[in-house]
Amino acid sequence: MTDNSNVTGWVGWGYFAATVLLIAGIFDTIQGFVAILAPDSAYFVLDGTLFVFDLQGWGWWTLLIGLLLVLVAIALFLGATWARVVAVILAILSAVGHLFTIPAQPWWSLIVIALDVLIIYALTVHGREMKARG
Image (cartoon, rainbow, N blue to C red; front, side, top):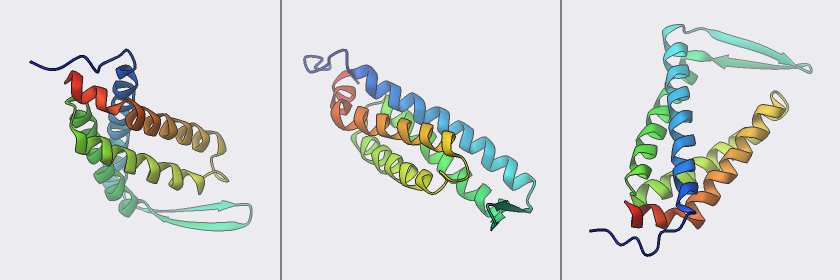
């Protein structure tokens, strides 16, 4: 029998974080498969700066990250402590990575950074409740 005495209504924040990670993982996995199946190089010119982008390399990276996110999200739903640590690290890396994409996609980058901050908050402040409820 589990001890639910430490569980409050705030446990929903942890499930919110797991759900966002699961959705992001599914999207990343799909994007990775699409980039791997249609490999090519893409070139972008933004304000006089040329970006060369290898889609197949990005596709493999995105596919691996997507599968990792799905695995971590499932482990979060089960209350695994290691999953909270990995999810916080991934959210920090995601937020820092999106700081670099603000010039190219400002609104999307700010939305993802805000979601990353919510994930970090949910798992650091209310993450133990998920384990107690599990």
